Image (cartoon, rainbow, N blue to C red; front, top):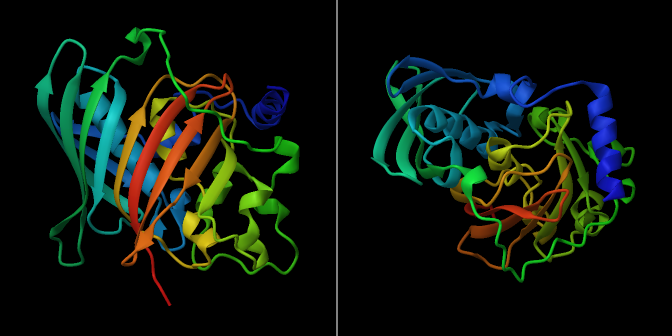
Length: 294
């Protein structure tokens, strides 16, 4: 697609970041202390409002499991977010549940330290890994790519009208991303939310790094919450997030579409699809999130 190629040209012109040598890779790098135990310093560069972004955290745990398991590609990963993570030191503990010829399953937990020195579990993950390159080419689908306007007709953080109030707390993650939001899902930014519970955007990393399976774990949780288009404000913490990686993404920006159909009892679901530059559905997710009413 011409518009996708245009965005790719602009991001790669700024820097020559590549998979394995980029800010995302450095900030998700885990250090193996011993078999099954990894150390990481969670970067403040991936915070939003007052917490570390859940997609970034999932990518961190995903990288640890890729090292611990005999297969390197996440196929499905489910995370329960137990307490909010903060920038700083963390420990990841992994456990190999089962290994097979085509799939391996493992679990992982991320811990940080309370003020009194005790460990606090932040996230617990169960995942199955395989080899995306070994999957057959056969595709039978009724899914269609989301109707997002060309990138030039979409808007990023730098396009906000003068006088737009800033996001309370940290918005550091916006500097790491090249997001261009569909104008049809930007009513919340203008004080006129649509009430439809939809969010769509072009997604890329700001330093031009192409997407890979681990960065797809970030992409599904990188857009503003659909709660904003429902007329709600503030932090929307994730309770549970499950991601399915369907194939390795082609180079170029991604299209991400997120929808919410039901908000009840202070919780909503977000269903996400991620499409690559070749019009392939490369990732899907569903998360349950909590919202603050009133």
